[in-house]
Length: 553
Image (cartoon, rainbow, N blue to C red):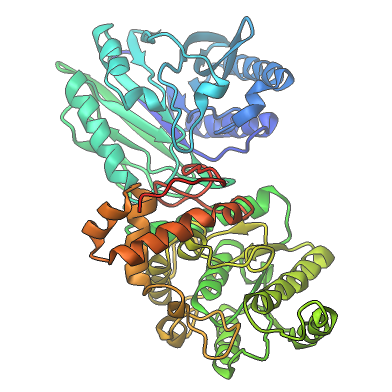
């Protein structure tokens, strides 16, 4: 390693807790990189254990086995192949650190311990890791590598310290979850650190789904002039061979791959696909089952499922009641036909009649109202869960964030299931995604080209069809307005007064939505997991008390 260096950037997936599988995958990618003449192979943050490992790190046996697996990886570099920079848990006298280990020739050349531990939103690293000291550059040959880990570059001190200590370039491993517009945010941040330090920077991110998080990769290299030299793709595993040259002004990456990242709303759609694909696959389900109502949410959920898993692993069931329109029956059947999935129709009318009879005395003969409406939703759940239990398919929930925000969903009814791809998608986003998918086939999608739902599904007024002539907007503001209000109250944490100012909605309407939002917290605590798409998803980002007397109105 003198004036030229080839670094292989491995943007790959992880499976939390699968120490042997993750290690084997790293060695396979290293072998590929060796065949391409790489001098150094770089892996993402905590690649050996998976990110985020959460309270697994608090289990001593897990840490012990992780340390042993890391030693075996270090030993594997004695084969004379390229150096390996990988993420792991490092324990020192019972104290655990988020670490990057540089191994070459069968020994540890250097180790960096994460200094800045994120403790906000989806992150709670201060719960499981100790803070490492300000890191020093790692010497390898005549090169000094600065290895700040993820959050270490979001504040200035670590990169400035490494630059002052003589680092030649900065290699940044990440476990950075997808959020809308995060590509621009990352690139601006890296450019700022590059300008401040005068050093080129590699930003390497993992890919794949992990419960409610999805990691999009989108790794890149920025030279000391602030220009991106290499851009890796989003939402797929890849290896980029980056060639570095020492110039009079320092190290510089030669121009390489320039992948085009997915624009909105394609990025959201692909995030949903990857999250669902990995959740179903990693947890061993043979496929998914969902209620296909003829409405836009279930049609979109079915489309995502087919694109993620393939039509043969998606089972759609229409569960009509006496209030279900012929239009809904037709639209559900057409959706299933376009998606080429199994489609069964199981009327719930006999079950509703049986429950009416069972409850007649206690209901005083009055089977109208919310309780009776919710019985229909819960009967659908019982039917779908019966099929799920019988055949093993995971029940996919189809509710969106707008409904979940205001409690416009039935506990133990349409909220029941194993996963939700729409959990963090507002209703207006669902419209945008549906229009996009009808005109586009996503990259890596397993579904058919062309439309996946009739245009009428997108155009007709949303309805739960639990009573005659019911429309969502009988109980809620128009979704275009509702979603603006919710974005202010949820994403921005604005007060009622501030929300009125930014949305133009009336004080009465906004106060009512805030009341519904806070009241529905107990429902959301019992909702299934779902992929995080924005900055404030319910569960990991936004953690409100169920019993709460504070209102801003």
